[in-house]
Amino acid sequence: MPALNLPYLMEAALMAVVLLFSVIIHEMAHGYVALLNGDPTAKMLGRITLNPAPHIDPIGTVLLPLILLFSGSKILFGWAKPVPVNPLNYRNYRWGEITVSASGPLSNLALAAVFAFLLRLFPGNPGVTFLAFYGCSINIFLALFNLIPIPPLDGSHILAILLPRNLARLYAYLEPVGFVLILLLFYTGVMSMILMPFYRLILGLLLG
Image (cartoon, rainbow, N blue to C red; front, side, top):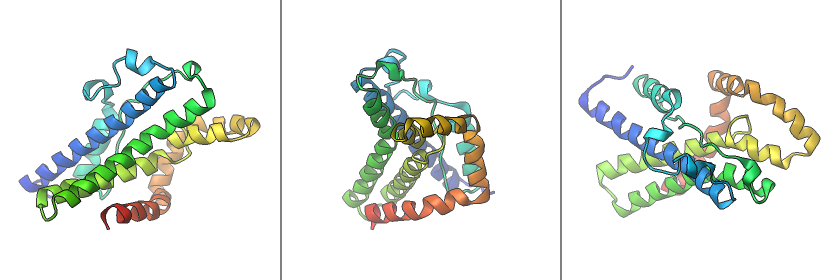
């Protein structure tokens, strides 16, 4: 456990704010793209908003990030409360599923690029350097993590649409055990082995 001194607490608070902002943008992107595809569910429920209150998930937005921060983890991630959508409202079901699912990870990659631009805009500023690095790092990891094709992550919705119908039905059986598989991959280190090469590649492209 890291020393709980004032500089660390200030850094942890800034990282937590970046994470909260990033997961909110992720969910807003899902809701907004769903609206563009003809589904107003997220808008009607007040979820296309920067107000954190409707997005906070007690475990994914609060508990897990706190555990990671105060355990000294090198990886900080979490999730917001999923935005409700109704795919039956999409004008084109297949296109809607793909674009709505992809919009969350793509929004995080866009945020990572914005943070990288900030670093180039204010070179040598320690505060901006810290903010830009963690903004890039957190958002790249969020994008890659959510693209993993394990239910209920965004990547699973994209893959399910692309699979032939008979394989998609078999793939749906993974949904009840999806979170167990995700935790198992984290615990065994397989998740890091899969994600870190892509993470380092994208981070190098943005900050290199």
